[in-house]
Amino acid sequence: MSTIVDVCKLAGVSKATVSRVINGTGQVKESTRDTVYAAMEQLGYRPNKTAQALATNRTNSIGLVVSDFDGELLKQIEARVDLEHKQLIVTNGKNNPDQEYEVIRQLEGRCDAVILYSSTLSDEHINRLYQHLTIPLVIMNRTSKNQAFYSVSFDQEGAVTMLMEHLISFGHRQIACITGPLTNLTGQARLAGYKNSLKNSGIPVKNSLIVSADYTMKSGYVACKELLSRCIPFTAVIAFNDSMVIGALKALSEVGIQVPGDVSIAGIDNEPITEFFNPTLTTVELPIEKLAKKAVDLALELTTTKRSPTAHHYHGKLIQRGSVIPLHAKKGWLDL
Image 1 (cartoon, rainbow, N blue to C red):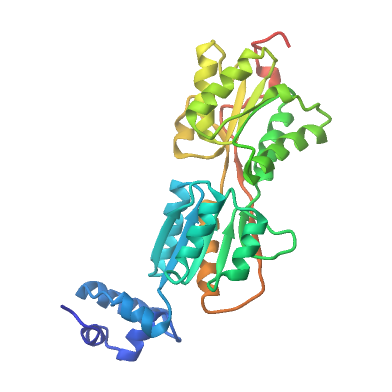
Image 2: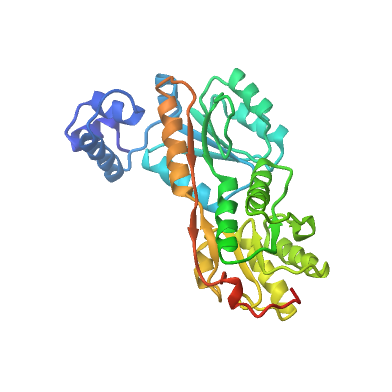
């Protein structure tokens, strides 16, 4: 079994240098650090995590608490943590604010910092965590009015505003909306983007054109069927994610409504499959990689440096494809 001495010999550096690389302490040139990691990999050397934690009072682990597992976000955070040669401990809060609060407290002592992506925790919960936690906490998907915590967030309202402005610029005025759950801040912000866009364009908000779902394909299908049953004319539909668009497309197809010839449709996420739809899907691309990188970098920085809370806000990107066309190009599936 290889030892730290073997790593020193192969890398051509001192034991102190290898220790600094392993523990993430002190100044080490990037080229030297890479050489040490390469030697460790070649020898199959793995530091004793328990001894390392006792010696440095650090675990070299980052905790991630999510309301529900998001594949792309988890993949990007895991990749960034791995790049920094740290361990990621992932816990599912199951969209339960009390459970999320408890699992964060349980991670204390097991991690050097925690990243929280929550749709349910209130500002009161978060402020209480900041008062009691002894390790840094970085909040994703949330902003603070008085900048009370470290945050990395995405402009949820702006994502829907992009879609609405695009549809309105194409002449659409009767736009249906399939929302996600409206019990959390994400759903509320996206619905505000829908309603404010209509109001700013002088278009009345019709609650009869709004249906709530839960981000799954099936819920998108059921929601679109509900819209159709109301017999309220619409020339376009936006859904709060791409999965619900898939369900909505099935519902429209079943009654002979063509997309985009009869109805334009758009979503949010820019899932890889959306460019292979027929028609290809207009959507908003989320900056998941940027969000993940900033959250991990900030969490790692806070393990060694104290600073005032900061906010980092990112915006989506409109991806225009074939599922949205100008209103004048439509046949009109209802007597509008």
